[in-house]
Structures are given as structure tokens and as C-alpha cells.
Amino acid sequence: MDKFRRFGLRTPLIDIRPSAKAITGRIKGAYSVPNETLEDKLDDVPRNAPIVLYGDKEVMSAVAAVRDQEFNFVSLVKGGYEGWVKAGGEIEKGPIFNTEIKWVRKLGKGEVSVAEFRKATTGEDKDAVTVDARTKEEVAKLGIFKNTINIPLDEIPTRLNELPKNKKIYVHCSTGARADMAYNELVKHGFNAKFLLLNIKDAECDCEIIKP
Image 1: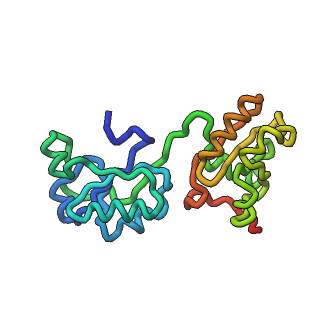
Image 2 (image 1 turned 90 degrees about the vertical axis):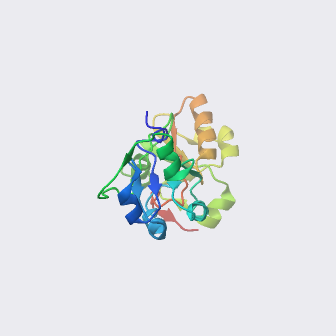
């Protein structure tokens, strides 16, 4: 199995060397994105994507720059391209077609897709209710998604009566950690619940927000 496929359909493996170098040899399946264009190419990539980089001496500064963009899972190919070749890894040469980074993560147990979640917040899915598990202070400061109820994580056990058991319950927070805990609490009490594992600052999370 491809060692870079463990997180989703395919972990973004990015060669940040100049295109001229990548043409002469690169890791098979890698995206060729020269360092100076990397930031723009990552704009539409979900922040929970695991990013794997390799390059020359500038690779460590690239890692820092990617982490500054709030990517939490950034790693390097051990030994870079040369290390890969010495280890007998597959390579390819010639014209480069893999330049637009694409990544779709497979949903884990209990997760709701962004598309499903969005339908609930727009009101398109009448059989789903969205719950914001952030604190009242966070909501007051940042706003709340349309058609969403704010029930902070620590209040969920005492406010279960506010949620319908005949509908789907989609829970979110700021990153997904509290939503996961809320999901487990709801499932324990017989609710048909799912949670959104996504940083709500992510470009993919583009649901309408009602400002305070």
C-alpha cells in the first residue's frame, strides 16, 4: 500500500523544488508545486489535510509557512528526494501534469460531510438540526451558523429535551474536538447524531454565519 494514502483518498505529497528539477525526477504521484507558489496552491485545501513535503534547503521554511496557515499535520519525506531514491522508492520523470492539489478525506465513524452539514444550515434538509457546541462567549464574539442552536458542550446533558429524537442532529464546534464529545453524549442517549470534524475557519466550511 502507498505509505502516503493512510489519511484519505490520497495524502497530498508535494515536491516544492523548482519545476526544472522535478522534470528530471520526482517521487511518483507527487504534486509539483515550487515553493514560491505553495501558499496560493494551498488556499482551497482543507486545513485538516495531512501535508507531506520534500525539497531542498528551503523545505524547513516551507514547513513553518504551511503550519502558519493552520495545517496541523505537516511532515517531511525522510532524506528528501535523494533519500527516497536510495531507499528504492518509485519515481517518475518528464512532463508535469500534477500541479493542482486535491484531497478528500474519508469520513470517520459518526462524522457528517460538509455537504450534508451545509444542507442542514441552509434549511434544505428539513430532517436535520444543527447544534453549535461552542461557549456562549464564542458565539457572541464570532456569530453562529444559520438555522443552528447553541448548546455548549457542558450543557448538553441537561438540555437534551430541547432536541428532537425524530431528526438527525449535526454537531459542530470550532475544530471538531468538542463536537465529537457532544456526539458521543447524544448517541449515548439515543439520538441520531453526527459531528463535523473541521475547523470552521477552513475555506471549505462556507456556511452562512449570522453575526452577533
